[in-house]
Image (cartoon, rainbow over all chains, first blue to last red; front, side, top):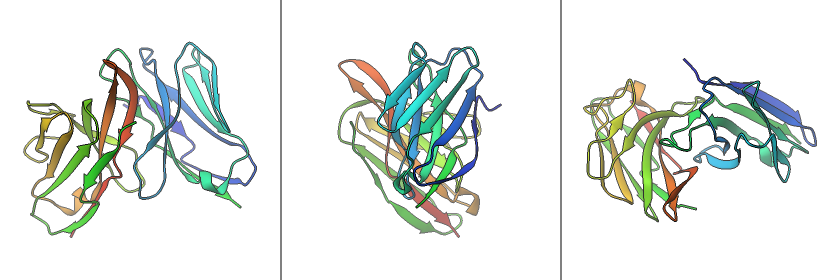
Length: 113
Length: 118
């Protein structure tokens, strides 16, 4: 049973556009929601993360929106750039536990110049 | 942050052989994990590497196939034993960083070891 559902599987956006990736979770005990970015040939790297006591977190062009009642969170990439082309994974974990995250299936983002 | 070095970065192996992947971290960490990432797929946790004791394996992974060692807080190895083409994958070492006695919650990953089994 997949506990974190991520969509879409792939996304193509024009340069300057907005990229939106959505995730939904089932376990209400999750209290840490990171997004990881992975470039080809590299390991994933933390991009941005949110805790459920806030509804939005913004870092530069990247924003996480969090809806606790709907058990959903999303990543918005504003003014998408070709350098943003990568695979994005959402995840969820429990801070008081082992910190082992449950990952979504990933979204392959391509930003055309 | 943590810098994680994995060796080898890639290898091509014959069916039936075994390969050991090394993971070295530049700081002491509380938790180390091994993940598998098949082409175009998500990250699947193989096991948690426990210092000085047997690793904790996830469902579907067993010690005989994926023996893991962790002799200290900064080093771990994963062996892929009796390999078959289905083991062709990227194997990733990851850690949770300890900061002032508390976990940050952030996973740091190595660049991975890309394994091809013929």
